Length: 288
Image 1 (cartoon, rainbow, N blue to C red):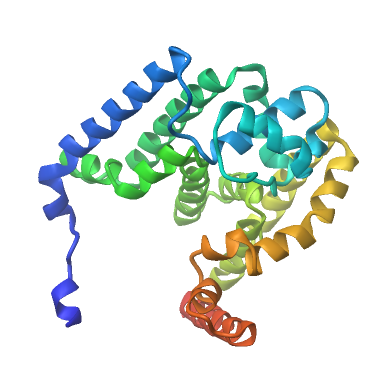
Image 2 (image 1 turned 90 degrees about the vertical axis):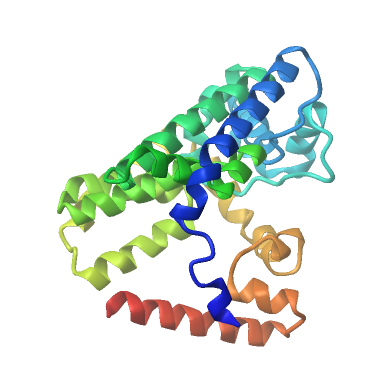
């Protein structure tokens, strides 16, 4: 049965529809942008509502209040009709990157964030697929995952850029650049923990001093801007995030062995066993 799915989606098969799909995506966003500028309620950007609300609080000098659902929730609901509140779980480094959004209204902020995301995505594809002809690059650009990222107003394009540049820097033995791009991935702490394991597995020891230097500078700058209170709120938020990831709303939104076990009704213990087994397998493959 599995043979039927072998090579199911390939660049050769995606090429004929890539340009129409890409044009449809861009046309859809142009339509949504026009509605936003006309003052209509936003149709897209569900996740972006949390980014924008947190940026508004930061512009008022209340960045740490982003972790308070009673504070950030009403700001989100004022611009988008969402069910419940999108709680804030990010470290101050990411808050630093979205700080400019605090000076913009929701419509303009979403438009600029999306356009910047598309520019980043195009640049990332051009770097990682530089040897592919243009029609194949279009097939990559039109990937459904990119569409879903921009529709939700997520930061996946930015994270992809940082990760791709980190890996390309390792490939070219540019240790300082690898440390720089790896430090930027501290906006996603779970990736910041994962990258050192990759460096150890591959023996790239010379990246560590640069990673510590740039990572320390990134954290120091964010702390200088937002203060230690932000870190206290971030750490205090750990229990709420743990509950959301294991039994709450986020438990069904993760792509992991643990989440799979939870979703099919296995007890938590067996979810951890499955997660641990996949982690050991991934580690073994990385070291191989």
